[in-house]
Amino acid sequence: MKSFVRKIVPLLLAFSAGAFGQLRVEVSFPASVHAGPITGRVFITPGTNGQLFGADVGNLRPDSTAIVDDSAVGFPILSLKDLPAGDYSVKAILCPYTEFHRADGHTIWGHMDQWEGQNPMSSPGNLVSDAQTVHVDPAHPSNIHLALSHVMPPIAVPADTTLVKHVKIQSALLTKFWGQPVYIGATVLLPKDYDRHPDQRYPAVYQQNHFGTGAPFGYNGNPAQPGFAHDWEADDFPRVIAVTFQHPTVYYDDSYAANSANNGPYGDALTKELIPWLESHFRMIPETRARTLTGGSTGGWEALALQVYYPDVFTGTWVYCPDSIDFSRYLILDIYNDENAFVRPGVKPSAGVGLASDERPMLRNPEGQTTRTLREQSQMEDALGSKSRSGGQLAGWDSVYGPVGDDGYPKPLWDHKTGKIDKDVVAYMQDHGYDLARYIESHWADLAPKLTGRMHFYVGDMDNWFANLAVYRMETLLTKLNAHATFTYGPRQGHMWNPLSNAELVRAMADAMNAY
Image (tube, rainbow, N blue to C red; front, side, top):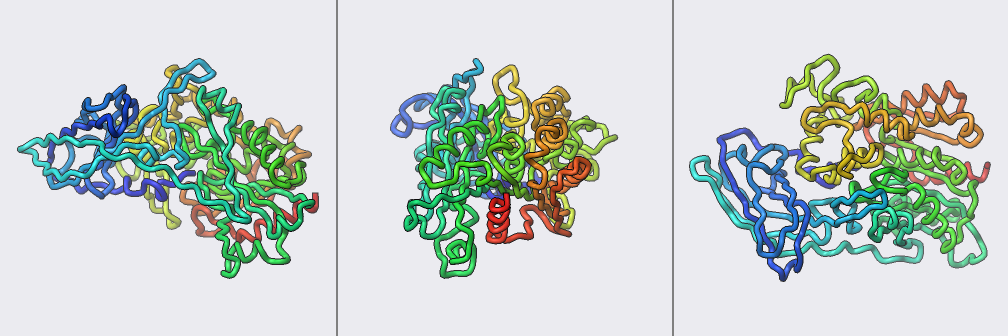
């Protein structure tokens, strides 16, 4: 799961209630900053306390004006008309979209990731204004103009080192689907003395995570200090090659390593294009017995999904705190039986926030206190982008698990205004195998000889995203199937808990590969 604590945590902070003011913002850019028209999304950020307002713009030409007014979608305050009186330092950001003529016949506009990890607020190529101070007063509505005078610079990819290599290749499969060049990549961590043994081949450990160009397992290149680098370069450490994938999409910083109707064939691109490329350019053993998987959160779902979907490619998986692997516990929801995502069963839904006790949580702390509700997450993502273009967690799930809507964009699992769950989307998600528990159960006759004894799960029993709930159900299923999977739970532990250090994890995977 992509944590907004990491990227957009300020959006969770709300203004205190107060008097009402009005603000109308005009936004433009000169041809010297961007020569042609822009279709995309404009953001207004009044101050440093996390408030955001967003609106779509279409074919905005240089020196023409986009208007951001009360119709813009905001978070935490939903409308500019409700902005409390006071002084604000207001800035504008414009995120350009790309027009895609997809192979499925749909034409859509979306943000082409610039290798930043699908963040529409801070992507390279975004246009940004200087901040302007404005006083909001209910008796004197404010009208200001913001000129987009700067362009966010490209992301600097870390330089290769003796042991760390960065790879980026164009995917033929994804390029065909999107009608635009699409790239996937990897960061490769080579074993100590790799160059000194040119005839030796190595097994590979694939670590799944969110987009990032850092080395696998946090390797920092400094073996003199205690930590993973010290272990990795020790004389007695297993000699393997470690790999992390990079595969951001139009909708999220990560494709979930799965083929999907909205994103295209990312699972096939990784297993049939990227892995063969890596094995031909680095001395990996190109055999099932020499490929293992691990990952946490989003990476945990991927580490299980890749093993399940491609059991002839990988030989074992170590999964920790995975996204929902049984959709009868989709976060805290049972999407098969619940009717509404926002309020607990038996409560009549409303368009506004109801009683705090009625609201369904999306995030909690390890002591059980709600830190974000599903309603708040939905509102926040609506401010960041329409049509599942927020770059947020819900957009990521909808784009992977759900069908394509009539307009060519992902059809959401629930209505972001009312919380009503779309049962047609639920049926699609199940029928297309994204509920991994049900997929495993229905395919067990074929999967049993390839998965038995090769799945290992770790999760804290106070996981912040409620990941433990679906893992409990997976344990019940795999026990019934006699799958000999292992499950380890951390009492009072939150998200990303793992009892194994990175070095212990790699040793366990290396030992397992040697035993197969």
